[in-house]
Image (tube, rainbow, N blue to C red):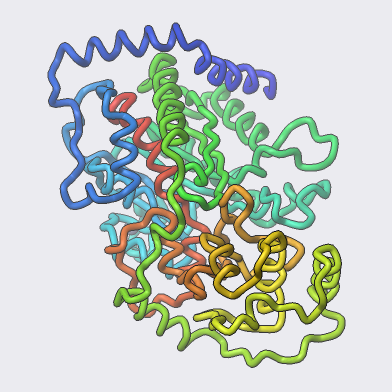
Length: 496
Ligand SMILES: [Zn+2]
């Protein structure tokens, strides 16, 4: 089975390299489209055209006439555990009309966030219940909550922890398969695809999904997942469409914003709706967008943050300060791990244990920051490292040298989670406490959402805690990356 999949995948991937052939095929399709009318181009919907990533995406693809026939009404969207319901925001921003027939999300706070921003017919807790048409959270007394329509697009995510390379025992044999959340991908997600057979689907996972499970493992969880789908396909478990062309897309959000978030997006194109030529076109469009975006380069993080005099910033900072645990810095425990880590780091830099170029500089406030000894020390070590070659270490010179830098103070000294030499800052997690050296303040959870492409007008439900907003952003997808995939599928055939 594994060989079958590898063949198909390598076939799909190598197709994209057959540039001449693909170009000819794409040309044929464009000629077809041209002969009908120009009305096929879908304009930005006026209320969302100010979204920065939509402007870029549409500029990158301005010469492409969408394949297929013009979309006649809303597409049917089925969402599975995507946390922030990013796909609804993306479709709206792209101006693609949709009807959200069903969602699933175990976190009630995330469900509330989704419902505050978009209408949905059914809201399940889990992929399994959604696949089984079980009663949903909106209709707990119903006999069943089924989706009667055929689904045009489904976006789903499964838990990352089993596969994440950030997990300390990720490479220990058995820890992936025995992880409590493993069966959500192997079982629930496959059942979801089998039962609903969406015409197109997108699944997001961390890059660790395609890394061996243990030293010497010749395969990866992703390859095993694809094998399983192939097996279901051969067993006739996709009666409507006969199975899927699957394209593996690697995207790093750092191509859009100087914020790392490398992800795998698997695009599933149902075989009775999308043929191999469509799959080739999809790959070509996707790669073209990536090339154009790389040529443009990523935005600075600061360009997406709120001004600190913005009422929204003030309101959220007030809320953050009110609710965050007020920790009086205590003398560190002599056995604390970070003390050993800072000693090693400082020795390497050749600085004394007391050297504190940032926190003793006179200007340091650390607005919104948990100013524990560990956090203060971490900032000082980072600044000492970044300004090691600075000739005159005046406060002004140090501030200037730290401009554009960020540190995730929720992470240990040893992880070195601060802006790297190429200007890229580490991936936001569900617990990140990102500190801006420019602002001398934390980046608020609501700004984590903005950094991932959410619009400033996104509604945050009353009573949603700062911790929940941060978790939502950390678990959710980066909208521009998802938009690349959805827009590529749209341009391929306009969701027939
Ligand atoms: Zn329902």
